[in-house]
Length: 316
Image 1 (cartoon, rainbow, N blue to C red):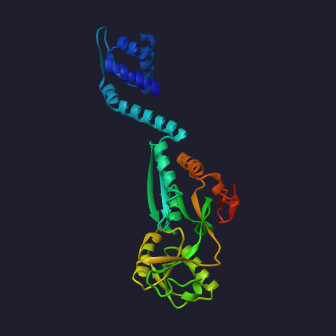
Image 2: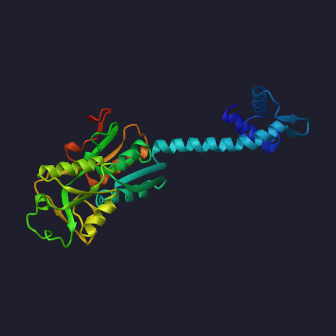
Image 3: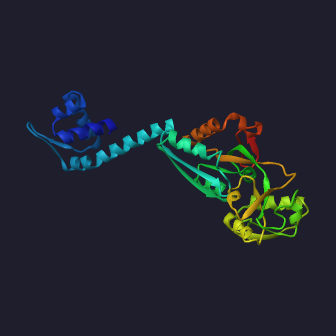
């Protein structure tokens, strides 16, 4: 039974007249009768009891009449969703942002304009840690993430686009004795306790901080915590210092101070999504991102790249 035949059957069942149903369907009465007979033959069951003056549904016909309209409606809705998906006008875009990263200026205007331009695409947003965000990409719980690029280098089958540079900084209590020291260097803090995420929470972030310390000849005492909120808490109370970035939301906290670390090269913040994620909203978001932020923001190294199953970077 074709969907056109389902439509014919439903109309006849509603009118209980081949003549009236044919008028509604803009076909001839004989053609409609042949279609219904073909359906009955295909199903090997009678759907209508025909007489000279009346047309009635059989019990099987009643059952079909109760069920098929819902099937036809669902079919029409699915077809419409498919058309809208191809046009990028409907669907869901799930965004994840690094929990301590300040998205003002680079992402917030894009999200705002995206919702204005594509109101039928539902946007969800959440924050997560360095380790959690890529995991949610692989589990298909997020479509796109904004995070530190170094946390993605060993992750296979991700598309990655560098979008903004950041620099590592020292975060310390506002009343720390070294808070106002000119030319403050990381080595000045060799005797401090550093609060940082456990390697189980963010292996990449933990390894980066340890490597940075060793570069300055520091073998740090660590306070390992489960989340960045706890890192901030230990710094706020004056118990620890921490490594953060110059793009952190922690800069708005009046109880801590953020100082740059001299002679440390810049790192990249990156947008990333799964290579086999064909959600059309991703490309719409990226297109709008480039329009709003301008091509001059993106250097040669900002080209979209991906890592293969061995974690090797490739350029598209």
